Length: 135
Image (cartoon, rainbow, N blue to C red):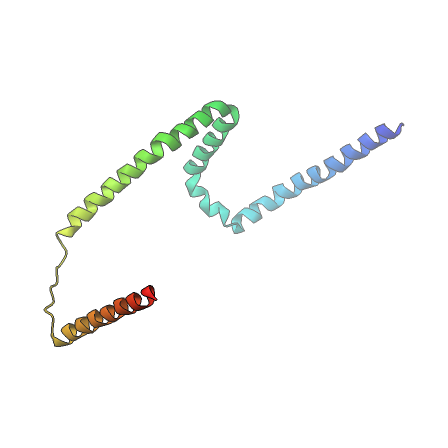
């Protein structure tokens, strides 16, 4: 048998061996493995997975149309969705404004003293800027 034929025979045997044993073992072990797998619990979202598969298949088989739809989505749909969400948020904000409590505080002597001290510090700062700015 030529070298190439022996190589092909070895390649076929080496590829079929793990496939056969993987298939046999997976039939026996699959039931036990599925009982302990967490991802089986997530299969309640199968509609989402099917929708994602449809989108991925569409992109694979219709790349140019998918690209055009993607660009249209970015140019039109996402800005429209952003405007809709902003308008809904503004409506909620405006309707929630009437339920707020406005608190007014009368200034006392300590607050007035603090305000006077801040004004004095501001004047001193401006004086220092004038002195060092002209030097």
